[in-house]
Length: 110
Length: 115
Image (cartoon, rainbow over all chains, first blue to last red; front, side, top):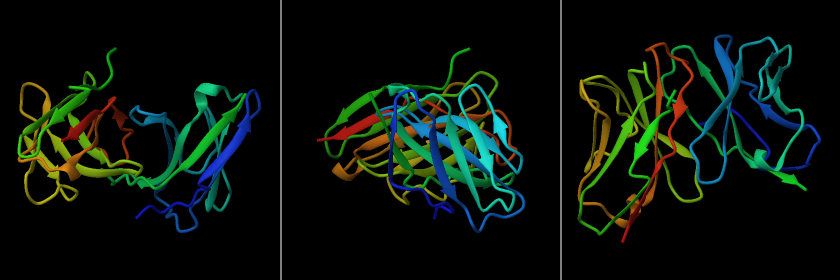
């Protein structure tokens, strides 16, 4: 079973920042937080991951709370192409497989 | 720098036929993972392979399904005697090392339809 809880869906206006929350209250010290997204009819796409520090790359920023029980994925300027299901996943550095939950279906509104 | 490649992208089979799905990992990647996504559901892990070895097949159905990753050539997911319930999208992912937690990169998937 997935170890994360995400809202089933969210809306965001085009051009605004999309903030996707994720709860992982039972996360262990050696578990990373990963984010993937799946655009309709495509394979999952890796976005970003982190352990405890905030991370930023060309796609997004990941903000992890100090107690690591929750995190937020930020897409700074959402576009229509960001419409997708976003999956928050926790994995240790011993885990081979990814356990996907139901994710958040993000709708970008024109 | 080609990503993970899967073929065919779409496959139609009649009940009882065999389905063969192929996956070529990213260049330099020697670890392959197969996932299945049933209609309107999330992705479920099936099997993890290294070259010539099955590392974890805990998600594979016990019958009719098999996977291989030979020394040369792509990884193959084989489904014998397909049934309608096998209709799904099958995704392959690859990673460069055995390190757990390594980022996996996914292919575009093969959509299997069983008539």
